[in-house]
Image (tube, rainbow, N blue to C red; front, side, top):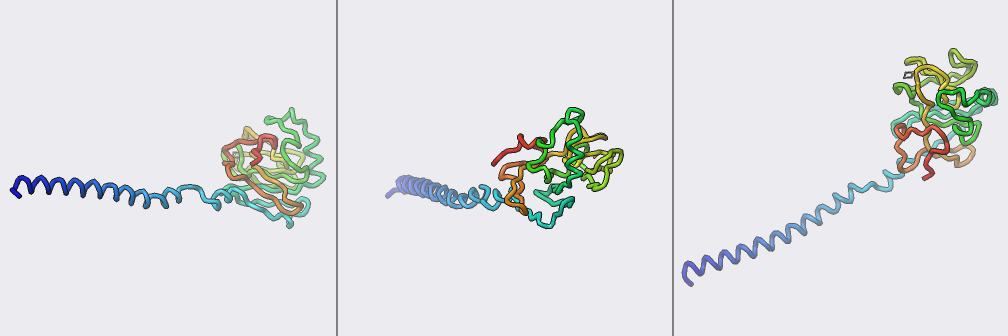
Length: 199
Ligand code: FES
């Protein structure tokens, strides 16, 4: 075999080797990428993380608790007969963000909502006796004087809207399930029960 023929054969061999390496390389890359791609799919655990079960057996009538759901404060209040009566007396049409009691609670004695003031995002304080400058209990935002009733409806001050709601269901008398797999939270801007997503 002359030098020229040897060079041609060597080039052919190197070409074939490069092509084979590329195919093996791509296949290897694909195999290596699979676990990575799978890891990017939300796991069942992450999807389930949108839902949280809350024990409210410790909430007596008039009891209030604040829990953290998806890094967001959630208010849960077992309303007394006095609280229920006070909110029934309010004319929904007179509110800046009109809503009836039925619009705001699945069960009249239980308010569940996001504890973020709709003015600039402070966490209002529960006032079991009376919210300043009103004749009823509710939530008071100390930051700039935002006033809400026990259904989180805006009564006065700078907040433009009622407290936002989140999806929840009553598992039984003493247990709630908060959230859904896809509900985003405050930015969904839900202010009536009817607007809440079911799943
Ligand atoms: S942040 Fe609540 S009144 Fe301003």
